[in-house]
Picture (cartoon, helix red, strand yellow):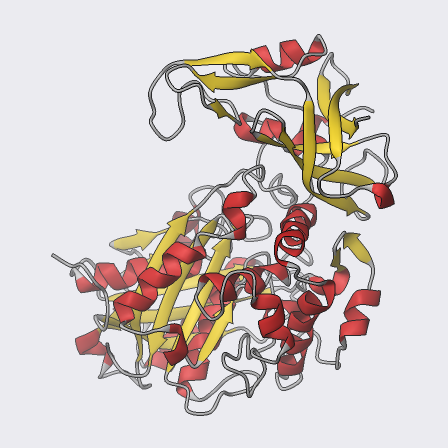
Length: 134
Length: 392
């Protein structure tokens, strides 16, 4: 699917590693070096303390659905409705907003196991999405 | 040093535009109508005004990023106190709290807070109308999923239902209660009786929120005038006292949903009530920001009207009805009366009217203390004011 230009991620020096990894099919999140805590979304510093010292770590891509909504009316050109927005909780802890793919909207349940996949959305951008995991 | 604004300032004038559709009318014209009427209500004139507050930079509001500057010049006022804090729909409640503090500290004496929007005809789109943020910074991890505003609130609603057992019927009961109040409001956008079944059978927009779980879209505006305790007693109407104020910011990013089931209302509400020296049981009416049925539901819990997770049952038992423990949104709310993209000003004005015995919809008997709850973002910003017929 091709993303409307108004929705294309504006990549910056903090987030560039994320999108580079996504283009390689890898999901990475930030870890605060001093504490080992994972943080999302990424910053150039440890949120709340404002201290430096963050690094990227690869995660398994496995997660569970925390909540979701089947969108039936949308102002966006793509994807066609109905599509499924979700918040998933990675096995490693952090939660992410995403879309669920390869699943019937009526089959989505909170708690279901999902795994990351990468959807090309134009301009070389690979968008992490999640699909039901075995 | 001012540590509390309780009883230091009062709302002495208020006016809500009766408009619900205003094709071809610039929102600043509606600001002017409402400000002039609110000042007349107070027995004051434009020449008395030394402070102006607004948030007018969002879709269909007419202002650019220097919104209060744009508006002041259009109105022809030259304020020496101003505030354009923008935390979403509850901004005007923040302005009341900030104006009360300014008046209490001597920075201003007569402050106007004003709002207007014309979303039904405004032709210039805004990138924030659906999704609230740029696809940049943290937003680059949310917007590219074709995020929608209703989808975000819907995910919040579904999580509340999963964790606490709240049902679609209970959410619908909030819409039904607001519509029942709107039946008494001649200016409300929708007044026809509504049932829970009507709500559940309306078009699903983003599950679990149906069309009738969502607010109306109207053109219009409103303004209030605040002044000092001393000057309030000389105004035309009995003062409505600002007895408590609290504001709090929570997580803007939707991924932090666990932080949002308990919203920043749980911080701003108790702060406001404590300043007023009141408990939730002593509040006679609550005007709760209702963009979608889930928002007053969570606000009821976080303000302490019921326990966390119990708002569904609380509402289903009739607690928010006219004879209930805490009637809400007595003019019909955003769910039935009016909503221009922000509802804070309308909730504020109905709070004032309720305490004057002049509710636009259903008047609560012996109404002496009111809570007005403003919200912004996906329950990310909370602004609470406690108003009373007597100074705290």
